[in-house]
Length: 619
Image 1 (cartoon, rainbow, N blue to C red):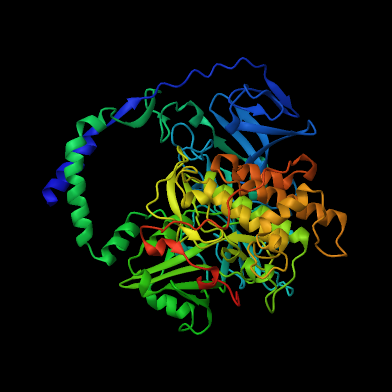
Image 2: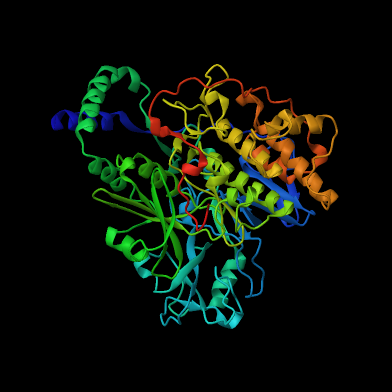
């Protein structure tokens, strides 16, 4: 069997060939544009005011007051300093960086944030790095190391903790950093990019900040890769090259593939659970999270002393890392010993770095022990504050709007911001965590699935999610195919609950018409009636609630094709209420009983109270 498997791998390798990519004809018939100091803006770039036929939408730039040219990249704002059409680079600088040494970048950006297929890369067309990572960090103790440049003389304070006694120290380092290089009681706050250059041993922060203000380069050569799905480059003879599969693959290896696939399935069925998880982890060496031993997990949680929550998949404990940072440690129960939920979360969150997605710090896979280590969220889950639980903080309508916008941005990033499309399948208030500043974080990726970004249709063997938030196409295939629009539906149900500060279904409502909140509130808006949100509510607050309701109603349309994308949702939440139209009334009836759900029983989550919280006092 090993011989057959090796022969199959050798056979497939022979089918991979280097081929020259033929770039598309990108002839543009548009006059160059200008904005401020950036002149002759031409293909592939376009200003947002240019006709749609000019340039490529992936390279749209914004002109601010005809003074500054702006590039929005991974939810960050950057000012364009120069565009070089000879070497396919654009030089940008973070919007938070000023000429004085007291300013720092607003956004984190690392070389690993760029993926194959992204419009921009941190390498040039010769595969040479264009930038050097710079790490901002805070340390509770003074560090005496030539690699750590002290920023104290410049009055910077970018730490994640506000030390009123100013006892902490702030430093920057240049180049990549391994976990072992991080000093004790030091925390990484930001990663940013500097232009590639050779620094002397005694470089100063003034020199670093000068380069910071100069900006860093990104390559946009990918636009010329044509049919090269995984990117391209120039070889020694300056010929464009890419990897491609031989077009006759399906015909040539049809029968052998079937045979080998059956052998593979037989082998996999006889592999132990531990080997399955271990093979996955060995194949994911590029994951950022730290791998902990089980003894490390016990030290972090002080012997599992402080329990935060418990549910069907395991227990969550509060812990403290060596750096002093608090963490939530999810210890998976034996019911999830097959490792699928564990693999789902490591494979998804492990590659995500976004303000509105919970960060996976590390994991443990040792024998039958499975644990996941996350950032600790001090303000618990959103449902704790929505449904007036004891000890919760009442959130203002402005804060709820900010939270909804943050959640929408997080889901939009999952759908479009990664090299793989990530579908969450379990968006609900319980899975939205709030940090100390009430910044929302999408969490719990146990039901998530990864899909290629080149197609929006998804194949599932069973319905996934929580009843009350699941899209109808997960039950009824004749409504439409399952896609990222299932997450849009779940977000719409979440948004309506946020706008009403109540569950969408209330069997105890005095008026039968109010049992299903989306139906009732649609009638209220359609009839021009005001939504009661309190006698002391301001006109601005009433507009905020109405906007959230109308966006939510768009998201829960019956057919997936009638729902907006999450990118559209973000635009609607950011825009004016006057620009929104009331959508048709949702037609999905509560009287319809979903058919029996076939497949894995674990793929359908129960009521939210059965879930385990990653936060303190979430319930």
